[in-house]
Image (cartoon, rainbow, N blue to C red; front, side, top):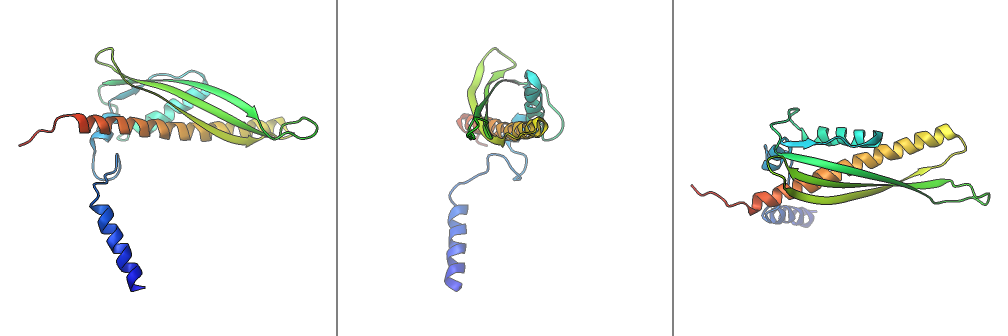
Length: 173
């Protein structure tokens, strides 16, 4: 028991000294969190796009207020469905919903592209005999895809801002 405790404490000390820092989190207000409040999210077409935009705004505007816009985030969505499991009667029983988000972070001050990337997510859902049940399953798959995409986009933006912070010259006092 004692050697296990010593190993655990030693591992904690090693990890704490390795320079690991959260990109954004609860260690006070970070530059990444601050930069998020300057991002304006452009409208995204269709209902799924509206939901993605709302999720992005919710995750980016942590304080609840948007500051004067320095960045524009422009997102385009593509959606595709692929039938997977097929019965002998040729009736599909399972489907994959793939949603791809292509996005660009632009400077709002000058016409300059800062980040161009894409994220995609694939979620599965059941196809039932009931059209209503299938519709509900498809909507649930949409919701899961949107949640995952919005988290992935925010993480990508956080990495971008963290890299920019590390590239900027440090001021010494």
